[in-house]
Image (tube, rainbow, N blue to C red; front, side):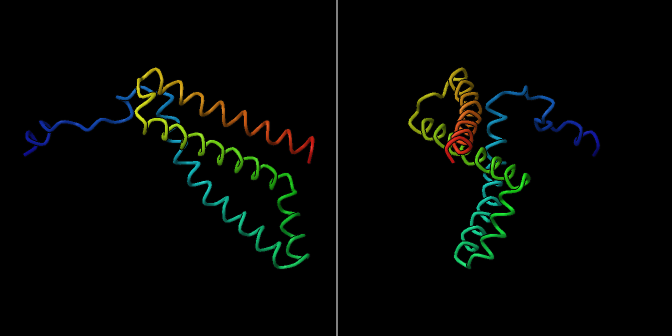
Length: 130
């Protein structure tokens, strides 16, 4: 029985695959999708607090105005923009464009760079004009 078991092919695993930017973006797309669920709960809390009255809104504003709250909002902003750009990347792929290895790698890098740049520009604008 052990001879038959050892003759079976092994499934591919992480030691076989070479790390690629498209792999990282696939993983990050899933992570940001999960983070958006949690972040959306915080947005709902803020909206409910705004509708509940000045005391509840002051509490929510204090939490989101703290350093930790600002870091969470910054991360939520990045997750939202990264997930959006990843969705646009998939929409382009659905048209049959950008499917080559070189183009998909460029799209993956552009997704990461674009999401970071848009997040920084948005937050810089909020700090300057907000």
